[in-house]
Amino acid sequence: MKKYTNTGSKDTRSGFGAGLTELGKTNENVVALCADLIGSLKMDDFKANHPERFFQVGIAEANMIGMAAGLTIGGKIPFTGTFANFSTGRVYDQIRQSVAYSDKNVKICASHAGLTLGEDGATHQILEDIGLMKMLPGMTVINTCDYNQTKAATIAIAEHHGPVYLRFGRPSVPNFTSETGEDFVIGKAMMLNEGTDVTIVATGHLVWEALVAAEALEAKGISAEVINIHTIKPLDEEAILKSVGKTGCIVTAEEHNILGGLGESVARVLSLNNPAPQEFVAVNDSFGESGTPAQLMEKYKLNNGAIVEAAEKAISRKK
Amino acid sequence: MKPNTQQLNDLTIQVRRDILRMVHAVNSGHPGGSLGCTEFLVALYQVIMDRKEGFDMDGIGEDVFFLSNGHISPVFYSVLARSGYFPVSELATFRHINSRLQGHPTTHEGLPGVRMASGSLGQGMSVAVGAAQAKKLNGDNHLVYSLHGDGELQEGQNWEAMMYASAYKVDNYIATIDLNGKQIDGSTDEVLNMGSISAKFVAFGWEVVEIQQGNNIEAILAGMADAKSRTGKGRPVCVLLHTEMGNGVDFMMHTHAWHGKAPNDEQLQKAFDQNAVTLGDY
Image 1: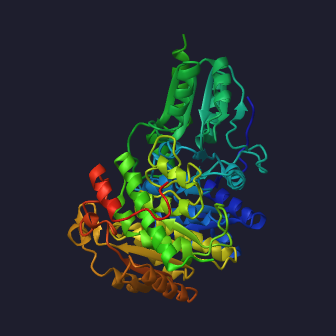
Image 2: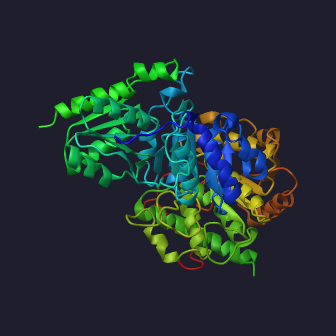
């Protein structure tokens, strides 16, 4: 199987910060807003270099989203930054009416998504955000897998007209995608490893876990196809259908509730076009809890071991 | 050429008729607050705001307005149409299927004059503050205006926006509060007494202008001129517009009953008797 090298684990939120720094230099219409989490979101550089284009709104996320919508009137491209929980659930109606329904070019950038925020526990660990955002008409939903891809996505969404939800996280995770990010295209799945027995589509840092799982499966004589779905909406249906047409079964892997996430989007595509056995690696409709990211990934079965198990089960269900 | 007082009064009466006809035709909509803000919106669009010909979303080089209490869409649509943003005949499509004139205003259908969806209350001030900041970034010296219901101030997001606007000296912005003292379930004092709204804005660091006769065009023009003179001095400006819900139709005044209720045929005729055609019905 194709080899991928971790060039050094980094946090995806730093990829966001680096992308924003780059945008500060290249696109004068980009403005940034933050609700008292500048350091956590790695927005320090942008703030220091472009104080006139940076808006510290305080702990007032609803106002931040509304202001971002207003800033688009006059041609600005606002990037809002706070934790995923406060970027979505807390401000759902503001996003729905002032951003999505109003067709505003706002980029909602969300760090600390999912369980791997860690010790802060369930109040901060949102596992419903992908579902909330993908249900909004016109919203593009992106969940990047590593530092390089988060940086590339941050830069790419500035050029994409329309509301975007960009999801990333707190802990360091393996960094293995192209450093230049030139292969990142919104809405276009990335084929990471071709295989014949099972398709594994993963999003976020579970993409790396899927690659590790594919190696383990290979050792067992199972050929796994691994696809990186960074864009959950619009979903690259063609890539999924083509792969499942070949392998006949699929595993979806995401750090999200099993309800409302990538898995359900994939299930819909399959049921409409080519019903096939599907197994879900996701959180089974529960809240999270305190712990280290590694402990939580283990306890909630979001790691490569869980993917291997799911792949074998999916294969066993093939007719 | 700005219109004279007679022309403004004629337009006001015609807008009232538009409101009544629109809500009557579909037996739904919000006439009370619409009638209460008719003089204000007529004055705003005809005299107070510096507007460009035509409409573009960015509104650079002109004053822009946001309606936060989107349920008074009938008066907004009528004033927009009669200010040239879209054909007056289109008012007949209000709340119909496939119409650009949705129950609450939206940008989604591309209706000229609307820059933000509103209806879910309490969001307009944040949007207006953002638009005001964009004007500053663009070096555009024009102003941002917004209108809010008094009951709407019960939504917490307003107070976030108010804090921000004074802390960051958003002084190119005039927010008007329609103080009619009424909301769906009764008077604002009964539903959730907000105490002195003026004192609250002052405490939040805003300039406050009171317009006691909020249904008198001359008083509105004088008060808004005062408000405008206070912009550019480091503070956001609030106008407390004392209005009568249902103004201009006697049986709709002094009650909250017509907040979201349309008149029947007989009531419509009675309202028409008090507001004879001036410019012509749509």
